[in-house]
Length: 125
Figure (cartoon, rainbow, N blue to C red):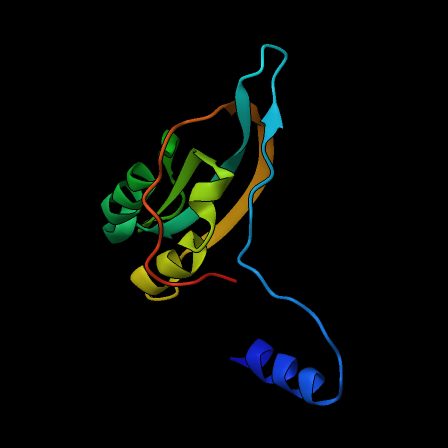
């Protein structure tokens, strides 16, 4: 919402710019295959939300690497997931866990393209 207000104000002041959905940058391998970026995702969440998060990552071709206890009632989860699967997923996870999830990501490597991923019905920033 705040970005929408900023964009409208700038447009009224005479600025011209284009806004598009986020796009993932793919690379081409040595043999011509398509490579996509893979990220390692670290999540700390209440235990009661662990299965829901695992299901969400399964939907976007994520692979669970580890699941360890963090505290008495929290878990540390580590996933590897294509970057294009993470677009819009962070907001969904925060909403689904009622704001209790702590999510960090880092680029891991480029791997072979994983196939089609179900798109979010909503936009993402």
